[in-house]
Length: 475
Image 1 (cartoon, rainbow, N blue to C red):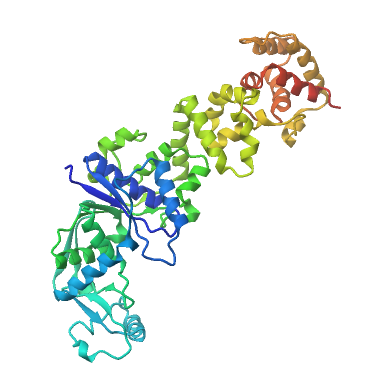
Image 2 (tube, rainbow, N blue to C red):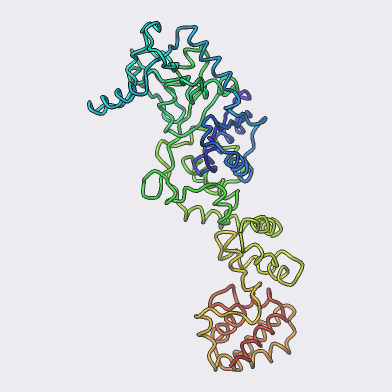
């Protein structure tokens, strides 16, 4: 099946949203699984809403997810002459006609449909009328002449056999009155010219598939195979929206999600392979096919995405994790400078690397890893959170003073600090927690943190002793 060609065809009117990213991934995996190719087409015929920034965001989102394409991207607007050429060919063959219905005529048709409780559709009034009777001053649109009787059948790779009454598929416009091609014509011509054999897209395009199949028939072109995937819904069963987390891909990047985790999560939104949940890219490529796509809508679950992201965080090689965290810095705004010392040459960077295994134990995102490391970049004397300050009463500060003297005389190699603190607790006749709580507040300014011995190890001897001294010396 090396001749398989899929495509991803976004409209550049916004960022690459999560549903579009899944569509791109499904097309990419299907092509790679079958040894074929995936093409990228930018459907930029809506010139008022299409922007260069959106095109760049689509490219960046695909690149971040690790989805590439074969050959340069095709820009639909640049092919308008080809689309008009096909429309003229359909006119010449009698498969299309010029329609002189005015805007007022079309509005009246819509109003009549509403009054009769039926879907608005064009009444085909210019289908068989002599153009010689055309009104003056009205530029005609060009409409496809679809069959009125019978049915159109789509053998869909996901939905199965789907039939549409041709009477319900009105003679849609293929060329507007100003000569610009419509989406319905452009997409068919482009898919044909690009050699597309399989189209995987949302099931909101299912009716379009029937119209497009009839266009293929009129042009005597072989149609592609269609696979219409149910749309993604929110946890409440409603169509996915921004309130559910339907954000652009770049927003998930900025929230600290890893591309491999997002990719893993997306592939499981509507597709499955046995009980497999965590999948490498090789696994997905080896297993993916349309027979694993379900007919029910998938539900977006942010908690599940975070769970998968946490898995990848903990499994990452330390150098790769440091690299991913460093790549995130430019997207952190004012915090980029705050966290920069973690990636420099000083003790904070060394301590950060030592702390990573403990930080990732608690974190679900890269942002949470960085937030957990704030104690490493805090400046002395530390600003204490209210709960931490409450732990440092007069008795606790006196205790820290005695502990400072003990740790100052301790060998900090290996388990030296832990051994010393445990011995100090025994000498003070206190449980370890009674030492650890004020010590944590002194070292981090917080009530919670990674394990106290891990904090000491990441801060190192000099910084740890200095922070303890700051609080022990305070009134």
